[in-house]
Length: 204
Image 1: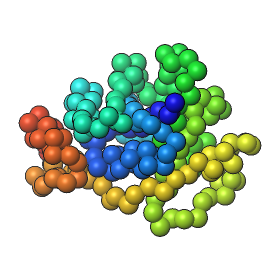
Image 2 (image 1 turned 90 degrees about the vertical axis):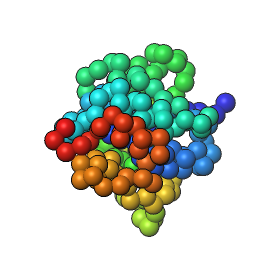
Image 3 (image 1 turned 135 degrees about the horizontal axis):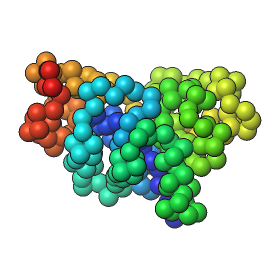
């Protein structure tokens, strides 16, 4: 049975870069489904200008509609508080005994993984998939991860090539506030939702 990968994030808003990350993981062949999981309060990002949980989840649902390999979870939103990965994965195992998921991160997060909340408890709970940016072919040294053996070697063995996509949620929010076009940066359904809800406008 193909396994599931979790893609967490603030999704404030979700954009084509997130979708391309998920598709790259599917293309690598070890994963049959990607679960998009919006964070309640992201531990590694500021919480200012964070759209409501309802709006961010709605945008995720719109963005992934029609792709049977993509699904969503409101697990972190329902739990509340700061969305630490270790708590998410402990809850995942309680709900799905015996199901060890993949967890998708970028290379920047891999290099910071040693600073994550209760990382020693976190590491055995999932298999991390790290997406490497195109053009950065050289992997960091095991020592650069600042984690005890055998984790650096295991983590570096599961790095895949991502797609180049220079889009960020921050850029989208800024463009909306400046009344500039965001089409093609996120699916049209999400563009329409942002406009209809008046999200990310200056001073709001």
